[in-house]
Image (cartoon, rainbow, N blue to C red; front, side, top):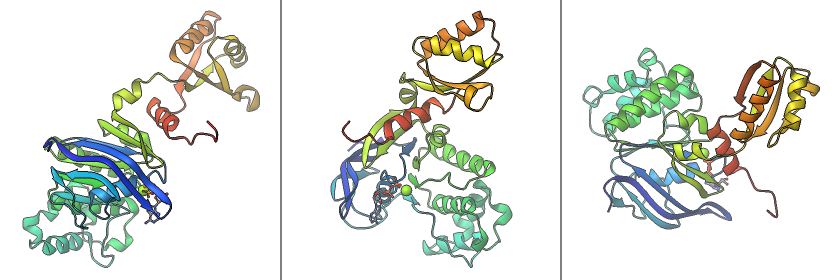
Length: 313
Ligand SMILES: Nc1ncnc2c1ncn2[C@@H]1O[C@H](COP(=O)(O)OP(=O)(O)O)[C@@H](O)[C@H]1O
Ligand SMILES: [Mg+2]
């Protein structure tokens, strides 16, 4: 038993009829860490998080949560909180009443359970006495997080928590998760966008069609040297295009100069070839006005790892 690990999964497989949702998945989540689970739609994220929450049982494999092997019964493991597919709320109750009802179910009252405090933490104090019926997706997500906080979890599991969050909501959620992790709680959260996770997570596991295609520190993923697409704008687009077309290791992927007559083009290159092109442009007297990756290096790595391979390759 490794007590440093909040989650230790080995060879987890889960099928729904003919669909293999998880195919031999390994996952380690360290206590006090925010671990991202990334993958495109249908990759198996919700299925995996459901197993951590005891909503379903794996067909095969070993799963230990907070040091305890998960048995075949459907129960939320001790110390775990969270939700998949949105939190369950009573629409006719207010936010505060929903939380008080949950506290009562566990035999506490709202005050001792800290209902006001968790509402404040997720930024819902102002709407605490509104019925949740009218809540936006982002507000529901935050109330679900508040409900999870009431249980003081040692493992918090959140499925696509960024969905529907406005910048202020995101700030609250990020703050809450960062504080929880600093206090030793393990957090696992999923997203279909790498950029969402990059702001929060130290480690990520990327799944595609039920298999892990990467697991490790974000820094390792970002450090992989791969070709990226860059938007390049200069004072003389046509000259830039000629120089780029002649340069070694540079591919023009979106010829915006001739197609849309704008002043930018998109080139695909490794960093050294790009550096050499910049030197040539400047040497030729062009002013460089913009040079930026079209998608972030992390998002590009994610896309490269998860894009379906063409048949026969
Ligand atoms: N209850 C279910 N019944 C049948 N198929 C399911 C069920 N849940 C998930 N699946 C299938 O399993 C795969 C993984 O789904 P899911 O875990 O929801 O992916 P993600 O959350 O990454 O989008 C998909 O092909 C999905 O259609
Ligand atoms: Mg999902």
